[in-house]
Amino acid sequence: MDRFKPDELERRVDEVLFYKWDPIGINHLVTARAEYRSYVSSVLKALNSGESVKLVKRLEDLEKNSMGLSAEGSNAKEIAELLLSHKEAIENGLA
Image (cartoon, rainbow, N blue to C red):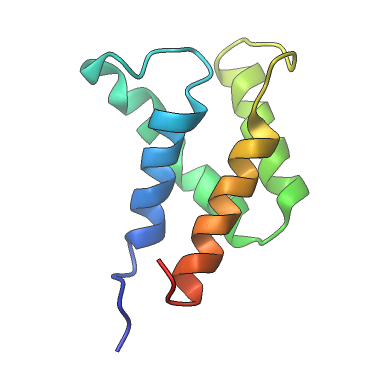
């Protein structure tokens, strides 16, 4: 029997995007939660591809095209690594 529900990875993506990624610095506003939640499905799709480069590009694309930010100061690579670690831990029953 699986230790985690199928939506465990989705829940973690949602939390990482809001609490860790937060490129526009709004996670202190409860009402802003929907801003990052709207990106979960596309990030989850990139994450499920298993390709780090694809995931980083998706995060950077959201920063640039959805938020109007530049690539300077982006933590997309670190966030991609964190998300991939969560995915691996869930798949291996370690988290």
